[in-house]
Length: 481
Image (cartoon, rainbow, N blue to C red; front, side, top):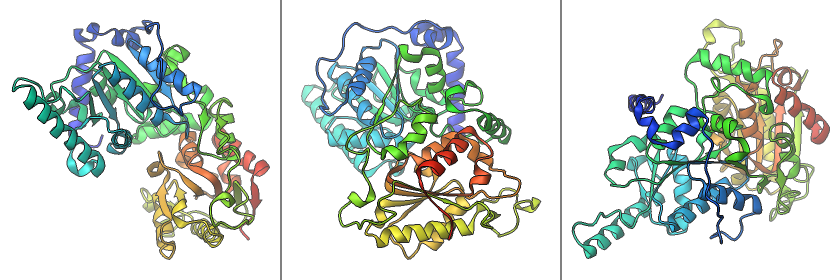
């Protein structure tokens, strides 16, 4: 846990849940006693966003008509945020008071930015230094407007009477500032729910009789600090793939538990994605999402060569490039350069200098072909490799260099992924968690370049085996030379 406040709030809400107070909400009966979810018998007559597809509309209908709980499963690029924003607008139009939360300030402000563009009144609860400037400014303007209206109406009127939406992190939902808003919430909406511990979600969920969860349990899970838990989870992930994972203890997410319980009764999966070329999308769709993802016509065949002022080259005409370093003598090492067996290196990050050089060389080729540096991301699972890439890319201004965990929720026209691991023991550590790799390869819109030792990477984890096999079959495959 990040701090003691989070711990105390989680502990307090768990005590409430397992006291007699839990019996007061039918929502609790659904999630703890297998009671069936309930729905009202109508759908939305119209939608604010006329660009929603049919599945998104069905997801909105489900969330609006649910009496107690609804889940929106949003795989990469499927417009989950647009769907959640439409749900917010529909509920506000019905006079509902909403608490909208996420596990991080970034996830909350992502929703907030969309509400700002639509000029929807809200109050953003949170530390000013951690809140997006535009979201904080809009929230202050909303409060000023509400105060003026309350003064006109009389001194006894709550200044929040005109504000139907409160935004906060899940931890922030337990703050007294939320209590000071003086609202009895009708609905709690949690975005990126799969990234939060279940107890963390209940800090917010306990505040309303209705809960809407949005997320994707096939992307990054809650961060586990305990090393024993990490080892157990990695062991489970090395032998399982998404469609057969069935262990709620090792994946402590309310979203996944609720989805496993309620299935299609209270969950809608968004299926049309608006980000990736279909060849980039396919391996995740087939191996994680049961082949259900569809690339929209606007993106299904788009390439880097379709961008303005970009030349047609082998790279810009290829949606997938695979540089296989197997047998090329490009072993991993620790940041110090020592072999990875050394006990003194425990806790140090792993790097692969030769892979880093290949990655930078590929980026330079893309830039020389006319691709804007700001449209390219260099991504790696290891912080040491990220630091190495940053030091090697100082001359290429604008390229975004991030860890996989830091890149979830983002996208770029071109992504160059360096996997790092290459060793005689064929050990891959936390790369066996398919969710991390799923995030990495689904950030790319038009071009994905994977640099990896296929013989090492494919030895553990069903998804990694499927990925390497797919790259060998479908990508423009190259050797390091």
